[in-house]
Image 1: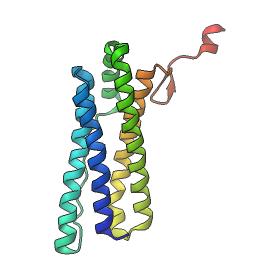
Image 2: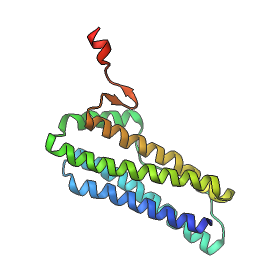
Image 3: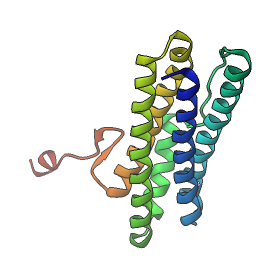
Length: 171
């Protein structure tokens, strides 16, 4: 795959994920949950914007300028605070809609992350350098969506840690 083909394919992935998040935001009117989906959608839109600039650079100059790819996804402590609010407000009626949106987003994030990992393995150095930061950001997105899904599911896990241990409680 050429660098140009990889950028075009990455644009398809990023547009798809962005649309999933914006659809979730449009369907869920609760302000806190809506904001969660909007922030992730906006972050994906920033990836689209970045990739569009890189595609033009490649097509016009045959090279890619190195620029830092940024993310607006907050730190774990900020996510934790937001999840506490979400746990307290998600009604049973809303829970199913939120779960479906999160599952779709998680699947798309994993697929996109896998694509970026493949590009880093296959592309020449210039392409590798452009796509490496995406791996870290997409993994952050995966973790964020998984945390939110675990919280909504009341799985007993949050940030990959067991919130409580039934064996410890019964002892």
